[in-house]
Length: 294
Ligand code: GLV
Ligand code: MG
Image (tube, rainbow, N blue to C red):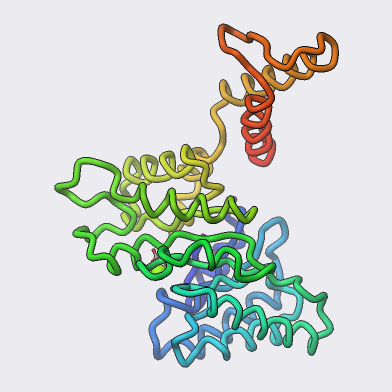
């Protein structure tokens, strides 16, 4: 859940929502003139707690702005230990991630925090970032995920649509498939999570469901939401269907029996051949289902 840090009301509301992570935004949802005040509100909201059970992240401004270094210093020093990760937007080369990594190491040392405790989530949201995504994914051990930024990405490549995260009219296929798949492969090659960005048409439940289901089907680990009304739809899309979960459990049982009791590595289950790779597919579905409380 992305929350503009300039809004005390939204910050308070975010604590009650059934989301995995809250992101206090200092970047594009905060007007330039409001940035210093938002930085203070974010720091106060972090320090006052109430985020139990959720990951807490802050999106700082990108490294080409005059605000980035102050954002980082303010939230890490102002609320030591409160931030799980910083979201770094508009990462178009690995150097930006390295810069944040080095700054965080200094701050952790000065604050007496465990080295490497604060993670980095890198947003891939322009053509240069996508072209360098493999190097970006390898830039720091602090990286926990890559996040696709559809709004900036669509603007960067000149995609003809005004709906963030939606499909442009006049193109018959999925216009987001290539960047999503490329970023997903780069993330998974480095053991990182892959997170899809926002869908901005808040009251278009069908459009959100389609975008979220499609990212989940590809293998994405989650998706941003911008409004409480989007939470249930996105959580549902990323929760395996009950039938898939049950089948995955059956595959694990059957394959466990086949390999340990019958000493066979390939067997039939419900008319389908299953082997070691099927076990891995099933494990992934069971893990996501368990994480969602199935
Ligand atoms: C998010 O930051 C986006 O650009 O979509
Ligand atoms: Mg963006």
